[in-house]
Image: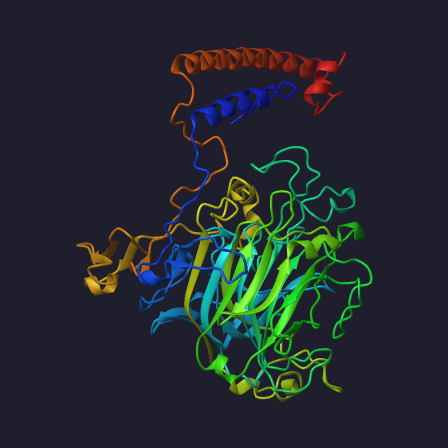
Amino acid sequence: MDSFNVNGKSMICSAALVSWSVLLTSLPHAVESGWIDPDTPSNFHSTVAQTKDDAREYALVFSDEFETEGRSFADGQDPRWTAIDKNDYTNNALHYYKHENARTMNGVLNITTEFKDNDYKAFNEKTKKYYTDTKHVQSAMLQGWNKFCITGGIVEFSAKLPGKSNIGGHWPALWMLGNLARATYVGSSDWVWPFSYDKCDQSKTKQQEINACRKISHYGMKPGIGRGAPEIDILEAMGGEAGRLPSTPIQRPYFSSSLQVAPGFSKNRPLIMHQPKAGHWYEGLEYGDKNTTSLNPFFYGVTLVHKPKDYTYQSDAISANTGIDESYFKKENIYRIEWEPSNKDGTGGYVRWYVNRKFLFGIKGDSLNITGASIPREPMYMIMNTAVASSWGFPVPCPEGCNCDCYECGNPDCDCAIPTGYCDNFPAHFEIGYIRIWQAVGDDNQQVGCSTEDRPTDLFIKGHKMRYMDDGEKEPLLAVHYGGAKCESDLDCGGSIHGNCSSSATCVCNEGFAGYNCLAYDGFDDYPFRSFDDSLPVSKPLLPKPLVAISLVLSTAFCASLFVIVLKKRQEKKLIYSIGEGELLNPTYEQAIMFKP
C-alpha cells in the first residue's frame, strides 16, 4: 500500500485517530492470571513472604505441577513452555538443545542430558566462513519467553540436580530473563542484556539500545525510560571433587545465585578468584550463614565487546555461592526467590534467595547506586535447562601439555580436557517437581504479563522478530495447537477428560486443554495488555456519543482534505520529474518542491 506524507501531517492524522481510539477503549490496568495448574493443592494457593516486615498477602498466579504423563514441549505444543530446537552459541557450549529431551514422567519434568551427535552451522572467525561442525551432547531448555512473564513476586521451584555430586561438567539452571531478550538467540541480547538502567547518560546511548535519553516513543515504549533484559539466576549448580577453592570457604558441589545487570563497573574491577577491594564492588549485600553462603569470586560479569569500541559495555554479576551435598543430587530441594521490583523512579526493591526456606543471599536497590543500575522492573520469564560447557566445571586453567580444544568422550586426545568421571556421568536427569509463583494481592508494583502498560514489549518484538528466530523459522513462536494429533481412541488424546478422538481420527481438545494430544492445561493472561497499533478494536465509549460523533466527523473531514492536498502535490511532483528529468533522479519531496527547472 502506498502511504502518503506531507511534512509529517499523515502522522498527525494517524495520531488523531489513535487518540480517539485511546479515548474510546477501556483497558484493564491490573492483569489477573489464568495460569494456575488445577493439580496444585489448594493449600499452596497462597503463601507468606519470608522477607522481614513483608506482611502482604500473596496469592498464586502461576503453577505447573508436571503431573500429566508424556507432555511434549515442542514449539506450539504447550501454552506455558517452549523447548527449543537449536544450537547454543553461548558460554562455550558443548551441547545442542532438542525438545525431545524434555518430557513429563512420574510426576516430574525430566530434562535428560545424553551423548548424541548433532551437526550445526559454525562460523570460523579467522576465515570468516561458515562450516559444518558436530556437537556430541544433547540436552533441553524450556523457556516461557513471550508466553508467561512476571514483574515481581515469589518464585519457587522444587528440583533434583542431575548426575553425581562429585563429577563436574553438568550445568543445571533455573533462571529468569527480561522478555526483550530470548535465551540463546544472541541477536536479541546485543545492547539489551542485561541492562536495568533508567537514567539518561549520553556516554552510554550507543551501549544501551533502548535508553532513557530517547525523546520519542517507539514501539509503544514511553520516551525517557531505559529498557533492557536483566537476569536473575535462581540456581546454577556445579558438581565436582571436593577441595579448597581460592578466596572462598565454599567447596564443590555448590550452586550460584546471581543478579546480572548493566551498566557495570568499568574500572578497577575485581580480579577473578580474588575478593574485591573495598569500594570496588557492591556493598551492603546480605548473607545468611556465611559459612555456607559466600560471595562468588569466580564470576563478576562479562565485557561485551563490540566494534567500534564505544559500543562495548560491561555487565556485572552480583553473585553468591552456597555449598551443598550429595543429597541435592538424590532428592528434590526447594529453591525460592522473593523479588520486589524497584519503584518507578528506580529506587528501592530487592531480590532475596532461599533454599528449603533458609535465607541465603540478598541484594537491595541501594546497593546498586554505585553504578546507577536498579532492581529489575522488567517483565521476566522462567527458564529451565541443563547445559554442558567448557566454561563450567571443566579443568581451569587448561592442564599443561593439553590443548583443551576437544571434549569428546572416547577420544584419547580429549581426556586431559574433561573432568574426572565426566564420561560416566551420562545420561543425567534434571528433575523438576513443580514451579509455583505468587504475587502480592492488590499491589500494582507486581504484575503478570510479558508486555505490561509500564514496560511494553509486544510491538518491539514484532518489529524486530528476526532477532528472536533461528534460520529457517518464519515466526518466533508457533501458535499453540488445540488438538490435531492422529489418534485411534480417546486415550491418545489424554483420555475423555482432556479430549476425544474424532471421526476423522484426530484429537479434539476439551475446553481447558491444549497441545496436539491435549495433554497440557491451557494457560492465559485473563486481561492481557496490548500496545496500540492499527489493529486495535474500538469499544466502550468513554465520552458522550454526540461529542464522539462530531469529533469523528471533524477528524474524517481533516484527513479527507489532507488526502486531496497530497494528490495535488503528487501531480506537481510528476510534472517536476518530467521537466527536470536527468537533473534530479531520485529527489525527496522537499527537493522536488524546491526544484527550479
